[in-house]
Image (cartoon, rainbow, N blue to C red):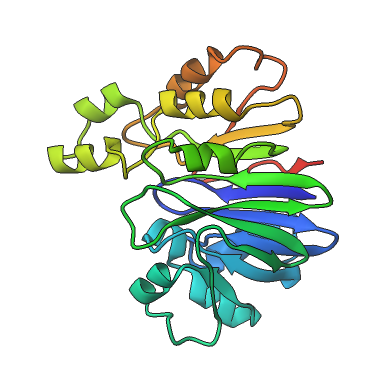
Length: 252
């Protein structure tokens, strides 16, 4: 099993997971052309893609989904709330998911996790294959007990470190948007990301990445500083994801 971020940030998100020659995509916030280019840059085969999982309706996660699914003739999985907002509710490609569901997709087991975010019915996902678990988690504003429990025991974790509170407060966003980002249904700060890692970290974690890093309200150095205080993490550094480049594969 392996996975890779094809880009992570406010301008587009997509994560590709592969197992035994089959693959699925979590989110597609890029155009169809850009996504295919990034899959090629990752030296992966778009023809192996069997489905797209959609976390929620915001454009940086969903705007390219239907174009990709129609091109490749594959289904998309998301909540009813997301499907209603996107106008997919009657589309034959839509497969419904509800928080707490377990689904078999591309030969992998997908657990849908309900998260607090300002969207219609947002989900995040934990994907398992061959006894290995990968948790992909972004776009949530608070660390609920449900989220912490759902991401226990993962061998790979791709988490959100969206903003630095001081940069957000002094940055260009108007007060209302600042309150949204920092609120309980917004995005995780660097410190919240560090707290989450400490609450779910275990010796079996082999890959840790942090993404959805705001270009206006954060800086990679600040993320690194926040995560550097985590005890015992020096042997397994957290790799930071970028908006404009494909990351390295995380392989087991």
